[in-house]
Image 1 (tube, rainbow, N blue to C red):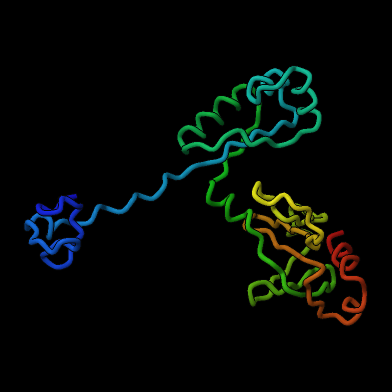
Image 2: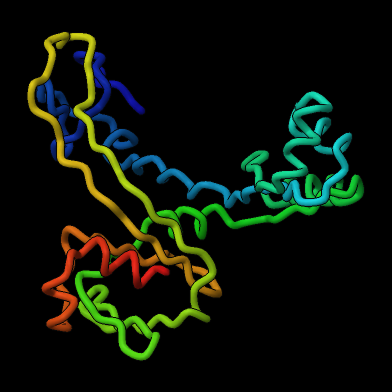
Length: 218
């Protein structure tokens, strides 16, 4: 960026003169183009290792585990996020792990972030084994065969503590319960909040909401 010849400040232009002192600016400073905008971030992928039936020695090397821990991970068969990398590096990791006997999944980071933000179901009902839910102003129907995974449980809210405030809080935040329905083939899960849900069937509306939503999940 050019400097004003009189006040030596960076040339903040107001017409052909310096914004600070009013001195006339060189033509190059007046016609200077703004710096180019930052380029969009490079795409990345999540490298996820599947420990089911994986060789313990390969798991120990890939995850930095002891032999005993690797055996236990293989028995439990859990998924592990290894790293977030560029597509080329992620594919290299998948090929290396696959050669050692570990199944690997590659997930686009943008898709993973989108799937982490559930869509809230405001209301609905269960008819003939199919959930009819009101989501974002539209009706979404979900049958048992459409559901890949059900995640449910209580949630707890707490005030965030700060070093500047050491006083004991007498008030607490109200907890809750959530049910997330992850559907095939993917996308954002559907969230059901029993404490904030409008039941469209009279029998459901008069029953405890948590029991009704839990029955639907079952």
